[in-house]
Length: 60
Image (tube, rainbow, N blue to C red; front, side, top):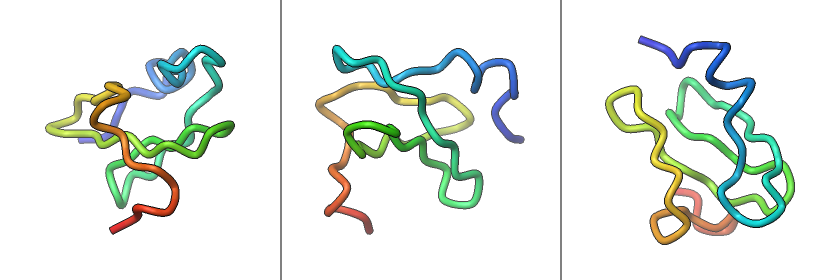
């Protein structure tokens, strides 16, 4: 199951800049368009916690 397109339209980075997020359905991640943080999507639920985000250099 994929994330709802309407939900994707309103999701934003939880950091102070609140930039939009790009969804990668294959990797099940959301990437901030400004800071590059990568947030996982677990069981179709976006995990938008700054403490759990990976930096752009930490891709696995």
